[in-house]
Amino acid sequence: MSGLTHATVQGGVRPLLEARDVGRRFSVNAGLFRARRVLQAVRGLDLELHRGEVLGIVGESGCGKSTLARMLLGLTPPTSGRICLDGQDIAGIDRKALARRVQPVFQDPYSSLNPRRSIASIVAMPLEVHGIGDAPGRRRRAIEMLERVGLPSRLAGHTPSQLSGGQRQRVAIARALVMRPEIVICDEPTSALDVSVQAQILNLLLDLQQEFGVSYLFISHNLAVVEHVATRVAVMYLGRIVEEADARTLFASPRHPYTQALLASVLTPEPGLGVPETGLGLSFPDPMNPPAGCAFHPRCARAMTRCAQDAPVLSRDRSGAVACHLFPGSSRP
Image (cartoon, rainbow, N blue to C red; front, side):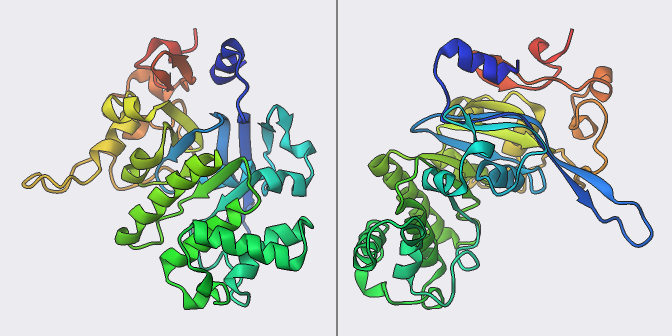
């Protein structure tokens, strides 16, 4: 039993959404006359999302965050392990039933919206697919939701191309919430927006969480964004969770060397400090040929001999969870 699952059983509280030892492999074309290679995008990952919380997932591009999001949405099946919603494996949940409870907000608000439909019909589409109400009733609910996300009803007949990027993302949020889901999975929802608009969208998401009681899984490579919205944070590296803690603890006292490097890389407004040095180097490890032992050890300034040989386990304590041989609980006996 993993440390995360053990903590759940001991605490007596079932998580709303849980990933247990989840992995996902892809077969990748390596080129003409070459054998296909295996990409292990997610490897033995444990994760929990509880009711009413905002769980932030952070990590560099290519660490498996978006693959994880697609698995949690039921769009990509895991190669190994299980994903459970309220204790039930989502593999056994009807696709429509799952969509009523778990909805996405994707990165690009333009490509995720049908350019030929009006924004009212885009927001009403989930209601139509699930056969909820009649056409006039669905339109009324869509316009009400548009107004709740800060878009006036006069825009209901507009198409996405007539809206700004921030307005399009508000449409995507309205569409995700019109079914009153329990979970919204936000995959880089502000990274395609101007900085001036990002804060508005983040505050809107937090306001809507309070109003609807929804739980968010918020994926981003932007630590400042995650610090603003998350109640708890999990750090991913090369397909695995390497650290997890409540947001305040993690940002104040990061334990894993990778988390420390990520936080050191954040630009500060303080004058005279210049561009920060992360110590991570310029290259990212090849996910199709991950290092032996701890995947982070080739980039880690605190690596020990055993780090190149033994992969640490994710060990939970009062401060959260960490997978690093610097902490005794992470080393197998």
